[in-house]
Length: 384
Ligand SMILES: NC(=O)c1ccc[n+]([C@@H]2O[C@H](COP(=O)([O-])OP(=O)(O)OC[C@H]3O[C@@H](n4cnc5c(N)ncnc54)[C@H](O)[C@@H]3O)[C@@H](O)[C@H]2O)c1
Ligand SMILES: [Zn+2]
Ligand SMILES: [Zn+2]
Image (cartoon, rainbow, N blue to C red):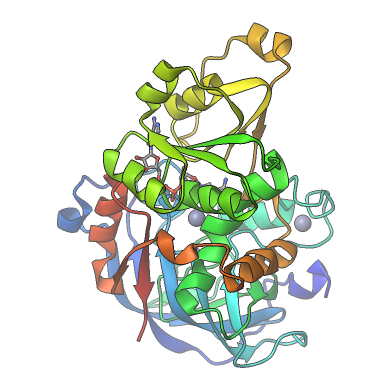
């Protein structure tokens, strides 16, 4: 299938259904969100899949900081928007031209569809897809379609997925099939936390088993980096966060040590590879300071636009260090998701340990508060 197959504002969709979903109405509401309720759970209309698209019944969706960043305005997006991008579900309908996936197949959603043709898609994961990035910014599916509406008014898609809902229509290029033995909540986590955090390890830092690795920021994404480093045989993995509860969780997931950023900087231990997964400039500065001469700092956090960090350029040059940004784990999802699937199946990847809570869709505003306070690994929304 080419991008031309999916690109058509006039692509006709099949029958419309009523779904239940969590729609962000306005950006930048006061906290706590449990009181101001910027996200409304409501009925809305979902058109059937058009050319190159599929209908998925959502089984499980994780609440990621990138959802919160739309709510608080750090990642400005058009509203009203149906949030949620880390999810898994069952294929229920195939749009025209989709012939490489079956009805009833469990799929993992990925948050950046790939057109398959641009320089990003030809970079082996190093650079994001240009068309996918543009449609994500616009709040459409790949190809420009919107399938969500409310009383005739369009509702924006979040990252081509919009999974905080009973059903989603997405591009075929937004999903990767997984085995039916992978439970939905595990499959959901493969699509963002693992792809992103794990990818920072597998595709960018690539630490040797003897390397010393630190993870700065221990939410779902940082913990995914931590368990991936451990699963691939790295013995010395250290977790760093500002919250003591996160340090204990990192130790429980197998970290050799865990400490606050202040403690880590004070100790003076340096690491061959440091992954920053906090999304805060101070965390990136700490990550850079913790990196050894010759080492690599990988940043996956997404702070608010326009922020800056302070770096001593002499240490970068004289110590031959590198700082690399990584989006979507610098991954080709259809290649990488089966790797995490297999690591999980073999018992080496403790994905279950990333689940801190299971919640109903109605609790989404409260879930944003929990995440905002730094208290969550992954909260999983389930749909009965
Ligand atoms: N690059 C990508 O493709 C990609 C994909 C998904 C998420 N993200 C981003 O990755 C980041 C992490 O996502 P998440 O869902 O795990 O978030 P999270 O909120 O669950 O976790 C962030 C953690 O960082 C900690 N933290 C905050 N400031 C810190 C500091 N100064 N030093 C050390 N720790 C600090 C918090 O206590 C928290 O435990 C977010 O910015 C998110 O938007 C990026
Ligand atoms: Zn995410
Ligand atoms: Zn592309």
